[in-house]
Image: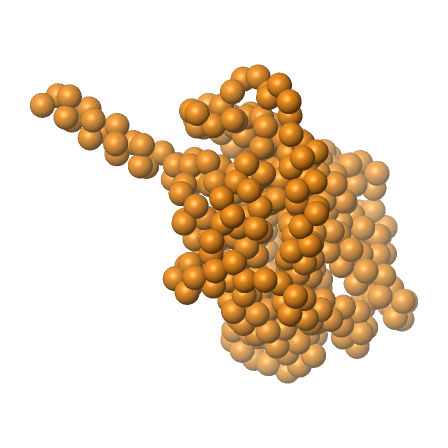
Length: 427
């Protein structure tokens, strides 16, 4: 009797523990997204604190992406050959350290370095979580569970909008970032203590492989033309949600609708809520249909339509605007099925590397799009300033934000050259 109870308890724990690992690792993604989008609700404060132009504000925000994209391939390779538990715990601590430095920065250089550290640590969040999903869940659940991962991540982005805007209004941006740093240090300790490497996996071995296949893994991915097409599509389809909802949406809507910042942040956060709901639904639909491309094409097409309406028609009620932003995020999230597609065209032993490769293009497009829009805004700026911060006109935003519909249009054209996998991995 006691033996049967122990066996049932063990079976229950075995079935539940993967979800516990998922919960902690996706909490890191939540934290990473909160830090990533935080400049959007403190843009005026940062421009005043460091005397920034639109381009330099974009560059400050993009320092996160500069580190993030540089780290993607090394992160994937490391996670394929060393302990994910140790790497991810250290990465969370690095993010927290970056947030702490950012909160104390008195010069732009220190603020840039803080964002750089956040990017270095954040580079492990999505790839690390998906590596753990690969280790702890069967392949048939990858699209659904990774979609749920993005749900948690986008909730972090939501937290980086309206709730963070209220904290900034109440505490100031420095104290707000200091408190988020403390939360990160606590999460790092919890991850280190409570997460274990799966027994029998390469990651569970304390010593690295005698012959580490770094170069063979990356060579396999680089030689695959589909890897490039899928990754470029992913980056271009993701850039609008990153650049608009993550930085330029709040100041644009503030200028176009003359609403208070917390109210605007709440509206923009609806794009992230739509993304959070859409990504697991897209994964579930794709698995059920046994198709990837129709989901990506449909999502990117509708995302393009709703984003264009938000940018170029600025006479909506608050409810209508919020609905459009929600639909923009909801359909744009369908691009995330491309991660399952990437996993299926490469071997499982290189899963971390392949995920890092595609995620690198998301970071590249994010790193380029935010300062590009800032540069375009500066080019059309009429020298209007309020309290030391540059103010850009609605017309100025219309010209600068054209880069985002163009990005999604090119992403759609790339779908003509991407092959369907019918949800069947090569191994």
